[in-house]
Image (cartoon, rainbow, N blue to C red; front, top):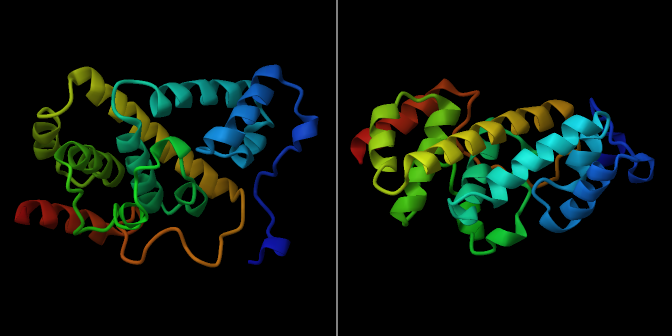
Length: 206
């Protein structure tokens, strides 16, 4: 569907019609932070209290905590691609400028591994939580080499919150897809049972 013909399932509320002070502050900040963008909060603006609470929890998990933001941001992109949310996969956090385009377009491919072991462990965890691929034992063994239990909770909460938000955005159909997909061909997918098998097979080879 072309952009001119796109009709979202939940429309965005025009910024000038948003009177809730906390949500207006959130939207002003989203212009800068961009992940999620203004369009997300304008859609959530139909329920300002929920939108503001969502923003506060997201801020704590995504840009707060003790796990490096760049690690969580790359995992967010990976999860968006596996869930199949183009809107979410297109987002880029300015605070994670060290993430390369190659990493963004490779992080959800079944045979790709990040060269940094700490980042790699987090991506494996995000993959297992999203795909439910049965790798829990080995993933937790790997995680504990780099993360405290408190940080594992931080990652768990962020990854699951991310996956839920991705499903919401995809269902709402906030914006039309761009001509060039933000999701690479061959990316693992929650909609493809072979993705779980590919993930497990790759781990066994490693």
